[in-house]
Image (cartoon, rainbow, N blue to C red; front, side):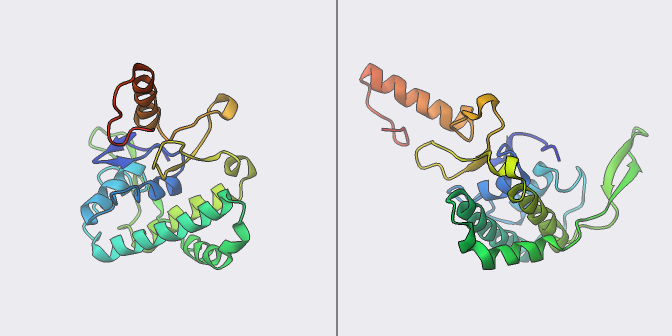
Length: 201
């Protein structure tokens, strides 16, 4: 499912998988800080088609997505640490979320007469969470994709991403964000300039 953009409203959509993009919203400060931000995330990731009414998104939805994010973070980190067995109960909860059927898509005529994707009915929080959980199940049970999971090497960056680069040598969640910060810090070290707050020592 292609994201609408790499980033919008401080949200990141470039981690390589839907479930990882949800984990990225926990990057301090919390990017899912209200129902409107959750609406933007759902649209930005492509979980729901553009123009989908999201009036039902409220504080209860937000709390459920935040809880799912914490759950998925524990499972993904356990896999990265090689301690997957420790996530047994959490994995059962992920599977329970994934068992909920995702929203059914439907083809509809857009204003210009072309077919566009819509949802067959108003999106339900559980169905959308199920879609994210299914993505996590697909990711963690695919040996190739699981082997591409990486932690960003940027200082104090908690993001996990899928490294699909040639040679699997990608070091940062984003060359423009953490990669650029590292290059600036390296240049300052060589030039003997004082380090700015947040630059790598």
